[in-house]
Amino acid sequence: MTDTQDSVEELPPPALAASRADRIAQIVVPVVMLALVILVWHLYVTLNHVPHYVLPGPLLVAKALYNDWPILFRALRVTLEITLSALALALLGGVAIAIVMAQSRLAELALYPYAVILQVTPIIPVAPLIIIYAPTTYAALLIIAFLVAFFPVLSNTMQGLKSTDHNLLNLFELYGASPLQTLLHLKIPNALPYFLVGLRIAGGLALIAAVVAEFVAGSAGANSGLAFRLLESQFRLNIPRLYAALLLLSATGVIIFFVTSLISYLLLRRWPESAVRRES
Amino acid sequence: MNIATAATTSGPRMGARKPLVSLRSISKVFSNGTVALKDLSLDVGQGEFLSLLGPSGCGKSTALRIIAGLGEATSGTVEWPSASFDASGKPEREIGFVFQEPTLMPWATVFANVWLPLRLAHVSRAAARARVMDALAMVGLDKFADAYPRELSGGMKMRVSIARALITRPKLLLMDEPFAALDEITRFKLNDDLLNLWEKFGWTVVFVTHSVFESVYLSERVVVMAARPGRVFCELPIDTPYPRTEAFRTSTPYNELCRRTSDALHGAMDAAAVAP
Ligand SMILES: Nc1ncnc2c1ncn2[C@@H]1O[C@H](COP(=O)(O)OP(=O)(O)OP(=O)(O)O)[C@@H](O)[C@H]1O
Ligand SMILES: [Mg+2]
Image 1 (tube, each protein chain N blue to C red):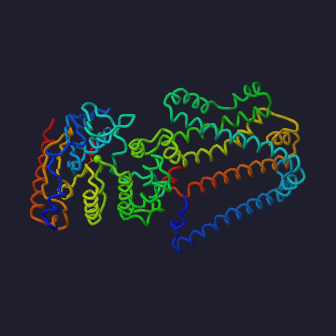
Image 2: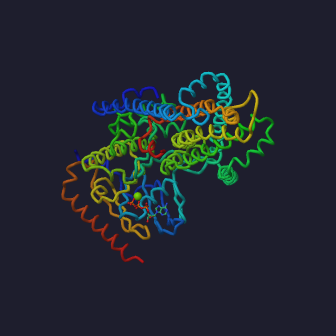
């Protein structure tokens, strides 16, 4: 793809202006809204004299975030590490198994039931077992987060690989394409939007699973993640820190969401609108 | 035009010509029980321009796909008397297929779409460039090599699809209502372009259409099909010599041929209506 510059889509000026106004609104509206929420929160706490162990004000939470940053940051790093490793494994495993199942009917028949069982079985009741079998708590958390993030990648990629246009498949057959060529030049590009939906879902789920698994496992010590710090703060009635940890967790989730959305946006820019829309 | 060249460019009649492909008593029953074709026999002569004409649902697409080796016939055989075969027993890369829909890869540029048949034969992008641009020039789209299918009109997409079918210089070009979705002006132009290319390169063309006018204008022989079950109803030779031009389209013989073909088509439709 060397010479695609001339075909860059040009938006007519009114559309451009409208989209610029919209882009500004996209940033301004949420920021103003956030400021308002924090203000209302602050006013509610100070005017009603709500005790800080029930609901700390935003200033107190900010202070906790600042003072406890070393502890919280270490915990955040552990949680993030588990989340991202689990996500990476889920992407690799999900795509690899989806390709195997799309290429071989036998593999599909053999493996798909287990993929479904994995998906429909709630992970919490299985978690204690995994914790018993896994060599370390860290490994257990990783396995649990992986299992949760794996299925959306697998099923979406599978759907993408199998929804290839019939006539295009016929065309490839007509020109004597090998299974590998059909996979590389037809099925994989076709599956890309579907895979990216899987990525977005899996990104969110990996974080949730990493946290929930830690609740169940209740790890301790230097290797503990944000969930453990949350529980600990609760026991100690250190509610400001609990809020600070919660804040970090939400921020992480939002960042994961944005990064995965950005990746899909960048990869799908060249896609026909219908396909991009179909994925939502 | 002088008569002598006109006479030589119009090929010999079917009887004198060796068949390129023969369908022998082809039947096709889909798994849902639909009898798409029943006992269809057809010879396609080498270098012939043949049209399959028939009402919607009479099995034209099905017949074309069976010729292309896409989807097995339930019974009957497809014979290629003089073709060379590849390891899997299929006549290799000698067929160009233009589907009823443009069937382009939406994520690939026009260039990449036309390059596809060569790419699958391991011809690099650089090595294929000249041929791809030639094929695009033939259909008048050389300026759109870097566009994506979604940026093209329906007619342009169809032309890309035709360029892709021509890129391998096939012996047999199978076209499934390629111009059905186009406006009349574009359609006439593409009809003329197609005829010019056919006369120049000497392909064999099987052209599916439900337009009486198009079939008469283009072909040496019109095979009229009837529906339920799909079968050959009758054949009409169109003897007018090539090159055929705008003058032919407005001539009295053309109108007469169209009337006869139209009558045959109505006959086929009535036959379907009374069939059990
Ligand atoms: N995959 C399929 N499964 C079941 N029935 C089919 C299938 N494809 C086609 N048919 C049936 O076979 C018959 C012939 O279909 P075909 O597409 O060949 O018709 P056609 O002559 O090309 O029609 P049109 O002019 O509308 O394209 C129709 O009755 C159709 O319903
Ligand atoms: Mg058809």
